Image (cartoon, rainbow, N blue to C red; front, side, top):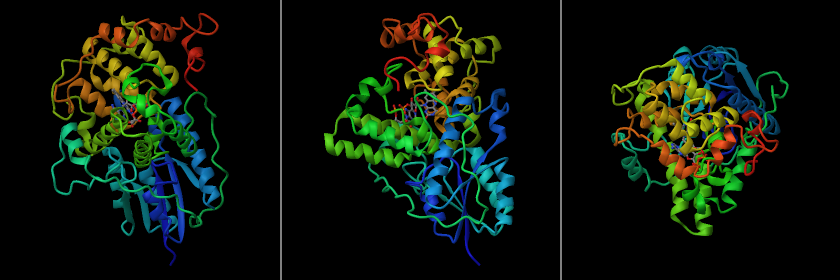
Length: 433
Ligand SMILES: Cc1cc2nc3c(=O)[nH]c(=O)nc-3n(C[C@H](O)[C@H](O)[C@H](O)COP(=O)(O)OP(=O)(O)OC[C@H]3O[C@@H](n4cnc5c(N)ncnc54)[C@H](O)[C@@H]3O)c2cc1C
């Protein structure tokens, strides 16, 4: 009997450096699947949907790109809408699939879904691979997971990152009938375009130039396109792997010489890595009010304060500008995220989970482990040894927007045609593609 594999693309929408896909490619027949779950668009955590319009567009672009690449290898992407825990067992039965391959997931809902598929299909081999992190979850053997970033960093920095895996040169045929190419509901616009192709373009822009040399001093800028790598949306969906970024960074350092600033790019990738491993340790406590430490923050849900924060109509102009930029572009810098999060939790005394859920809904680079982990950190219920972060707004304004340019731009007061709504400004100011 021919072997049939099903590769379920989750957060690994790429062909290159995809260990699970390489394993799937060893079968006689292969189904390449992506599942769009309708629950993402319905009210969920904190009564907000998980996926907003901007991320949906980015996702659809990424799927179309992946499908194009698969077709070039004689394959196709099957995109289904529904619940993976029902759809996948159905496909397994119908096409006599004997192996399911996935790249490791790290949040509780994802591995519960995987466990439920495993339980429903007795003869199915479920193979997971460390494709979305620098290190496999098995890197530390039986050692305890360090609950602080510094300990984690010291533990993993001496380890060697695995080599990049080439994309499979060819793929087995699909047992399914030929389908139409995946097309976009909306082509999208703006700085970010989804897909492995554009991820590679952005990777080239970052590491063919001198961005790493200036990274440490620029990464906190509120609104500077080349202040940081801007790779997060592609990393979040796996259009590019952290291993690919890591090796490009090492290559840059070999070519241009190691400097402290370039070290910080790797340092931030290790934060991502840390939150991914931590999320796996945390399970449901990642989304719990008391967080990892089961604390009782002195915050609550105040609908009018939360609404003002989301809309950008609080008493703090800097926060308002940040929240408007988020709504318009789906992306804000790391510093902007910290300022907005600190303001919600510390000044408005709103339950941090509402802020995390709003970011989940709005960000195009939403990554469950990183988003909820960072929110816990700022709210003082996560891994921060200092027990939370409170940002002084006067200091933040003086340091990061001394001339009030950022606030003016995102209040709709600066634009090519004078006074205009902020939505119109999102894509036409200097510095962003
Ligand atoms: C409250 C809050 C929520 C956040 N939510 C998300 C999220 O949903 N998705 C997401 O990818 N990042 C999130 N971050 C982390 C960070 O803000 C973004 O990764 C970063 O701004 C993306 O821009 P960049 O790709 O230019 O990052 P760079 O500065 O160029 O960093 C390179 C990569 O390192 C990783 N990284 C950078 N900063 C952090 C960080 N603080 N924690 C963990 N990893 C980091 C990212 O993968 C990033 O792409 C959040 C931060 C905060 C404070």
